[in-house]
Length: 373
Ligand SMILES: Cc1ncc(COP(=O)(O)O)c(C=O)c1O
Image (cartoon, rainbow, N blue to C red; front, side, top):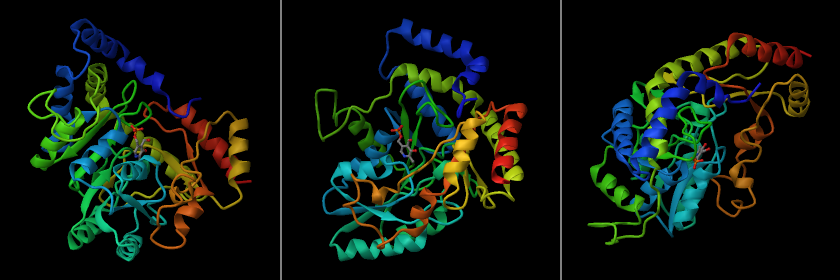
């Protein structure tokens, strides 16, 4: 059994993808070919947003708006401590200071009370708070309403780290369309993944879009050899765009299947562990299905599951404010108790749209018997 079965999808889409890839190979337009623009159009339609910039990874997709906003030394950006490292990494790369915030005990997404503390910390350190980066962790949209309210009050920009959340919906709004900008990742294991690295940045702000277009290609101005700002090589390969176009066509169906898998897990485990919540009005892309169990239990449970042939993963074993490369950055408060506690208690189970009933039942039976011991 695989934790995420990428090859299973090829049984449905393989032929179409192979044709699309060969068509790019035979076109000779390997970088930023017409498929890239077509993908941007289709992603904009899918997310109900004005502009999309397809690019080289989720990390670059996050970096583009931060650079375009001119965020840098002396500025702070508020990020959760319980996330993948890239959320804070891109802030540090600009020269700005990430300030780590705690998360909500049930949704595992940014806790607004901790954000308020982080704003006080930012001022006490003499930093200018410029932006806030909610993360749609494990696919669950962040609680944007209170975040946007606090952002407005303090003139902060909102960058949604939707690297796990693409396909999600928050109170009728598609992920990608919320905040001043959003960024997603097409890393192969993501709900919408390509066959390598890829990402996309979303915005309704046309001025920001123009700047990001320039930054994507070395800060270009009128042409490739006219460089008006510091930029990146953050282009998307045409082959990846061609693959994503094929995958996007079946993405809504896959999202439904993920949701069915998650609901079945939730029903099976609700009395055995803390199962993921799905607040009213939210749709999760279920990038991960994560259980939380009492401290000290995890090692035994994972070992027993491994012996039964059930793969697991731990997202995340160390909160970012305790990571050696990041511990020197400030946190909203001396301790971030929810993030610290969860890192010792969570583990994720196999989750993908092609998890058939028999395989899922094997997971359910094993988890039920091990957690029930
Ligand atoms: C929350 C989060 N942010 C950023 C990234 C970075 O995306 P990529 O690996 O495509 O650069 C990831 C990818 O795992 C992620 O999960």
